[in-house]
Image 1 (cartoon, rainbow, N blue to C red):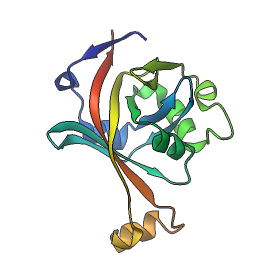
Image 2: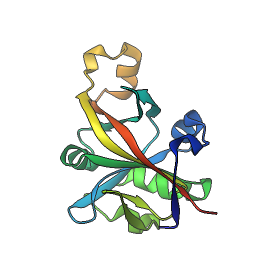
Image 3: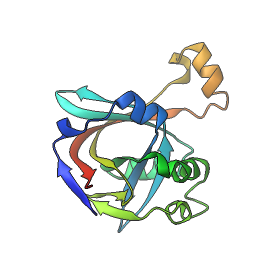
Length: 169
């Protein structure tokens, strides 16, 4: 991987832009045991329990869910706009049905017990610290109606950022 390990403080991205507008790939599993990736546009980067942390959300129905449950490490990978179609593909196809990385033109690489992609501009390697199901009855009515009509709630995962990699120019 043509990436360099950097201090997380050197990230230099606007989290609102990177997560909500540019999206990211959440990847769980290992090269040996198998893995899956999915496109996300919901999440948060911050500090929890005095640790740099990432919060992400995965529906129980997603193929990635099982990998998140089985593994303690996951990655959050950010890409440039030139990979928008690849992220759109990974968000609209299931890894149960196809090799998403291959069909999206992405090249998987192992990184610190997890998986990411050669094309990523920035990768956060996370150690799972907490997981809890979101209870639809506790979600505001407008959000529940808009996002959970099918009752397929998310599980919230919080991971401690244990490494940060940035693509070398």
